[in-house]
Image 1 (cartoon, rainbow, N blue to C red):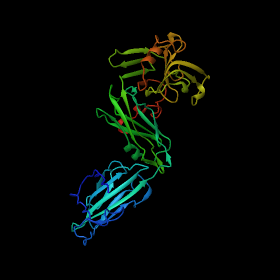
Image 2: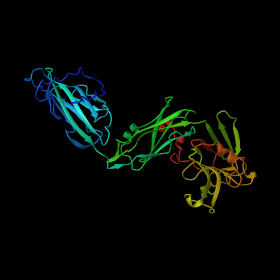
Image 3: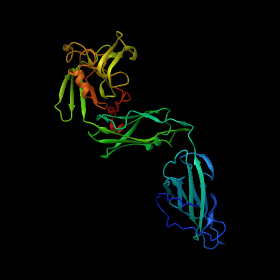
Image 4: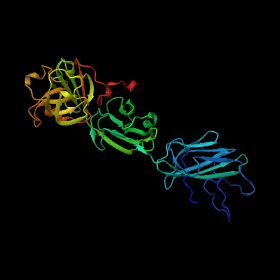
Length: 398
């Protein structure tokens, strides 16, 4: 019989008593069979070991089902391993009467269990068993907003959208880790049963590396639904570029690492009607869309004349249609009048081919994850769930 590797355990209860092999006859115990390890065949251990799930069980849940216990003695060793795989770490109870794994088992996997115990007289017993975990009938892993190996601005927020509402949020939080090389603390915030975002207290440090680890494949996110994804993605944080648009002064201050501050004339959202106000608050560039179609029919509660126009050098800030974009209007408008339909407009030429004017220059220098904050607008505060606007939530409430 091939001996399985020792499981990683805490609170070990003394040395392991080796089983004495018979010189002839029965050989190794069969799975599910308790045996005595006493030198004398006449001695039978009063320690009775049990393994749940029972030997030969199938369709076992990967969480909470595996338990090893003993009556009339103490467990001395428990070895659990996937067939042909690594040992499963676990923990003994303080009195040595039980053992459980420290994490989830894997789905669609066969496991073998070897358990050892001694009774009050030191007579040893052993029990073997085997079972297989279920194969999920339904998987509903998350879709995220990052790509492996990409570079993002310091305001990037990692956002996960699940296909099915999550019931066990704690299990998801344990199975998703967002880590940095400098130890920056990152926490999750649930906006709904299907969306959770991750960010640090302050903007990411420039040039840092961020790794997102998913261990969701064997996590039951909702009854009968599993997280489907085991993978890792790493992205780099680029330079810091933070822009503050003042709708009152109609100027935008652009601050970038290693470069002098720059002030750019803007045209923010009109003060009336209300549907054309620009949101106040901190937003983050979600996408560089080039030429984008601005269509009033897509705006909730739209007021005023209908429009459908193309705007060059469009940087999307919210899913609801807030952009920083180029605007082909008279230069005298910028810095003097707010005539936008809710966006931050910059002087630009016709089409999206001009890069020598503010709209093109700002677009070319931008990256996804850059921060844009609007202040002194007559508009309302941007909803924290609207795009990557979670920076508007205080850390104590995140």
